[in-house]
Length: 226
Length: 254
Image (cartoon, rainbow over all chains, first blue to last red; front, side, top):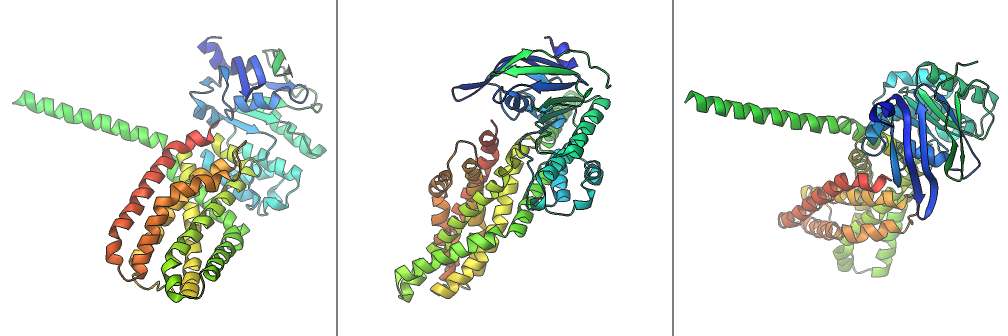
């Protein structure tokens, strides 16, 4: 894919391989995700979904191959990628001894986001009432929602969600869906890896992975939400 | 004449332009650095204030170390006084590794370290923020340790307070820098906890020796002779902090 094509795609990967020691986690992945789409990553445990998301987020460097995210090279322009991307993974990356508000304010300081959006973000995930409480007392679901609120602070152009429904109740799952839909409405791109069934009409394309390889490329055109 | 003047003026303008371009480059690269350093240091100190890890772990550890050494050395006042500066700095060094490990463990507990790596900030600011927070904690700890050595070992801390303070501040910056730099390695995947003291102790030796010598001279009322040792501490700080700012990104990035 040429530079123009890569810039048009939110994610464009070419023969991307990541090896841990001698163990390949993803092998020769070619993938193109169109801007504004919501792509579902499917596959059994160990298929390489989390590794793929972490490579796209620049948390991991490709061992071979490469690609671009939002038009920026994954390795050479990783700071540009990081400014525009949010990864919500297995870890919530919160500080237990800080309150919810303090955690979000710290995130604002790191990302240069407007600290005045903290209250609004907490409101959106239903944690406004407990903003002054320490995260140590939060349940798993509350921590997940707070991590989601942190992701909302700066409106990332690419949202990478790794098992976002894990351990959440129905209401919290619906909240995740709302965030995904809002991102899509804003023209942002979402890549979602989950084992759980997703709400109908939420995703616009599905990518299957197995043993570190992509089995099927996503459809290019985003479908309207039903 | 006019031609030469124009040429000089043009050269000056060119130098100014390239100078301002260089400044702009530095400013854009380090746009958020002071804010980031402050944010990370403030966050670490807030976590420490809530969890009281220094008070609950490092101070009792330092007290135990001093008492154990005091008992093993026996009641001879001269020997206790002579060894007191060394014991003070050993207590500070061990406390620094303990506190640095705790500070990085807080980053590793729920993947927060990855959050720092993925944040679009200069990674040297992360190192500086951690080192600043650790320096503040160590300076607070040193007040307690100094009181302990004064009481237990009879160290005359009022000998030359400015030189003693300079030795403590300079030594603290160096030890905080070393511990913060290597502390991150202790919480990286596939690393072992024992790696921290194994790396910190040898590298910190020059600061330890200079700190002990400067403290001994200051408490003996010969602070005027401590200039060379204070200079060594300052040089150690410069080298360590510069190395930390330069290599930290290589340590934390994949």
